Amino acid sequence: MSSSTTNPPLAPMTMFIIVFLALCLISQPTQAITRHYEFNITMQNVTRLCHTKSIVTVNGKFPGPPIVTREGDHLLIKVTNHVPNNITLHWYNSLDHITLNRLFYALFWKLNSFLSDPFFPLNTHGVRQLRNGWADGPAYITQCPVQSGQTYVYNYTIIGQRGALWWHAHISWLKSTLYGPLIILPKKNVSYPFVKPYKEVPIIFGEWFNTDPEDIISQALQSGGGPNVSDAYTINDTFKLKVKPGKTYLLRMINAALNDELFFSIANHTLTVVEADALYVKPFDTKTVLITPGQTTNVLLKTKSKYPNATFLMFARPYVTGQGTFDNSTVAGILEYESPTPHSTKSNLSSVELIMQDTSILGVESHPLHLHGFNILVVGQGFGNFDSNKDPAKFNLVDPVERNTIGVPSGRWVAIRFLADNLG
Image 1 (tube, rainbow, N blue to C red):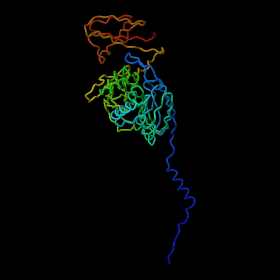
Image 2: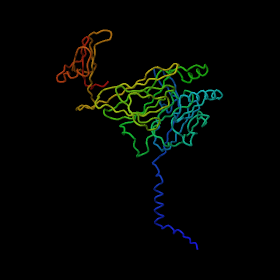
Image 3: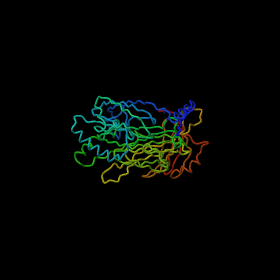
Image 4: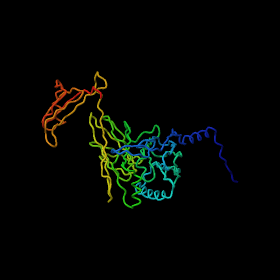
């Protein structure tokens, strides 16, 4: 005779435990939010290299305004087109940017010749746009362009990315003026995998053309020759970074130049690379960073412990391997160490030290100096060139001579100090 058994029903407490554990395994909702941005595409007069021209901008700014968000956040970016060109935005993806963009430029330009109005795509560079390709920006490929006088809302979520990306126009050479940073912070309460920076600073490299870039690329496509090169490279608008001694700064570098790879370095400083194209990397130290068009690189800058009043140059210059012409200029910014606040009973005053060197490259001669509106304290003098390591130890800081005019002897140097207590 066969026998059969049946499992007894689960006790209510057992069922409760199973349901509780299952709920615990379900990922908790993140603190993601929806962020709203409004981009008004307008023409704006901008002056660089003593040339003023009207350029296409977002909200009248060049470079354009930053988008700052967190991983997991939802973005709604309302774009209103106030210029004659049609427009889309690209949220940049760094996939063989130079080659693909050249192909797209040629394709779009030929297509544009059959249209009554030029179109104007914009792209958010690097955002993966998972299952959301219609918000990626390539006009007539993934979306219709925003016509002049019309509005379009870009609607997407940042998924699995954090770091520095950027957005830009996605047609012809309009992106030479229409671009800006896209900063993706980690999720709330999630820290960086490196030391927390004292401050984060975006650094955007670009190119400036004294003439209209659209005329340049139009002429090149019609003639079949290479386009004229830019007149200068740019760092942000004009760039001076004020830093405090002994602090760590996160520099978010973006190469928005059209076609040129750039070397970047800061004199007498070391950079630590921690992220590239919104992906964390194993940190490594370097004196120079190479960044190609479309790439982003985050580096840590640890400032020196004691450098009051010191300034250092930041340089970017091109790396070119092709045979054609290129912009061989160098762009520079300034890294300036902030001075410690002097302890004084007088407020908003600072002591200024000036070394006057009378060893001219054309010949030496005595020369007087008068500082309008101030008396000066002559704290030191010497022969030849001033030695910043040895000569300050000889300064007379007890009872220096006070005058309003000082003669700098031939072939010598004079060190003066004065109190900046006279505005204007």
